[in-house]
Image: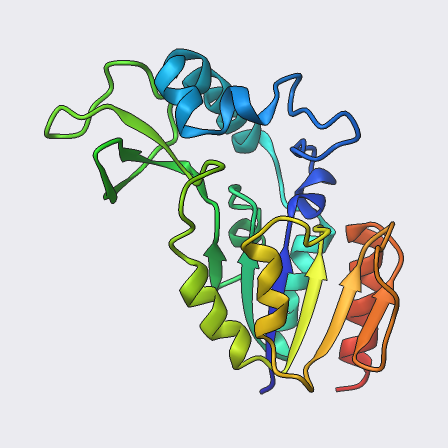
Length: 227
C-alpha cells in the first residue's frame, strides 16, 4: 500500500460546528489568541483560560465527525494513512482513523503544569484547585502559542516516507506545521482542498477549490476509482 499523509486543520472540523481561531475577525469566540492561548494568559488569568477550554470541551463532546472525516478514515482501505492534525478535537478518531498525530495536543486530555509528560483523560471541566497526585494544578493538554510542539519530529519522519499527501482544512500558514510540506519527498503528489487557495497548481500539486466536505467527496472518488 502507498503511504498517504493527511495534514488537516480547523477547516475540517468547522463543518462539524467547531469554530476556528482564524475566522475573518481573527478571534475565537470573541477572544484574542493572547487572552486564552498563551502561557502568559494562563499565568495572568488561569480561571479565564480554564473556563474557555471547558466550554470548548463541552462543545466537542456534542460534536460529530462530518463526511470529510469519514472519507479520510475510509481511505485506509486503499492507503496506509497517517493523519497529522493541527486540531485538538478527536473527530478523526471518532470517524475511524486509526493513526492520528495531534500536533497541538488534545482537548479531551489534561496535564500537570509542572510535568508535561503526565497526561490524563479529561472529559469533565478543569477548575482551579484540580491537581495531579503531587498537588500540581492541571491544565488543558494543548500546545499554546509560544510553546514547543513536541510531536513535530515524529510528524517529519512520517512525511519523509510518504508517497502522497492531502492538505485539507488548513492554509498551512501556521508554523512549524506549515513546514511539514517541505519534508515530503520531491516526487510526492500533493492534493490541496481549499476554498481559497493561495498557491497555484503544479505537476505534483493538484488543487480542489472547495470546502472540506464537498472537496473530500470529490477527491475520495478520484483516488478510489483509480484503484
